[in-house]
Amino acid sequence: KAGVTQTPRYLIKTRGQQVTLSCSPISGHRSVSWYQQTPGQGLQFLFEYFSETQRNKGNFPGRFSGRQFSNSRSEMNVSTLELGDSALYLCASSPGIGDGGETQYFGPGTRLLVL
Amino acid sequence: GNSVTQMEGPVTLSEEAFLTINCTYTATGYPSLFWYVQYPGEGLQLLLKATKADDKGSNKGFEATYRKETTSFHLEKGSVQVSDSAVYFCALKRGSGYDKVIFGPGTSLSVIP
Image (tube, rainbow over all chains, first blue to last red; front, side, top):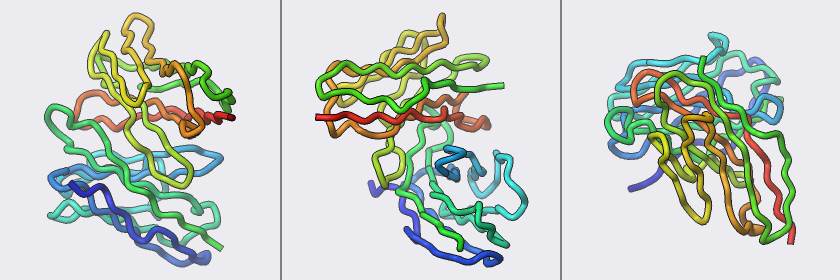
């Protein structure tokens, strides 16, 4: 099976702009989670989608949003970018239910730089 | 609430040294426990997991045993290599339903020749 893919891999934006990141999960996986990783804050959970519904949410402002499509692909959007949004954004997919459903498989990440 | 605590890094070892990275957790019930590894410039990879008490997960020479009595899941390897240099994350998840995965802060390991 193909692994989790994320596009784009690298992105440079300026403050105030918005950005959309994409994640394609492993075939058959119904859950997609998003994380922000920075040197100072470590790995922080953004949200999880399961079968097109958000079922978990972290403590991020409303500028961060996401969605999941019927084919389980997911996008996350960040509006009104701030310098502090510069980070590696990781997507992880999992079956979401059943035996082994909790095991997450990560993509390579999208590195976002906000200038 | 649920949480994961890992030993502070960075950890620097010589090649062929013994590795232990401590991980303890707080959670109700019987969570599944994981170790993930992140190599420089990459995403996280699942290294091993254990889903019930006394289970031992193992992969690539790494091992960890699910200890319910001490709420621990310490990572060990008998002889580390330079290629093991990475950041290691301990994590837990309760069931496969609505609880999110809880990650520890990560422990950076550098192995020198």
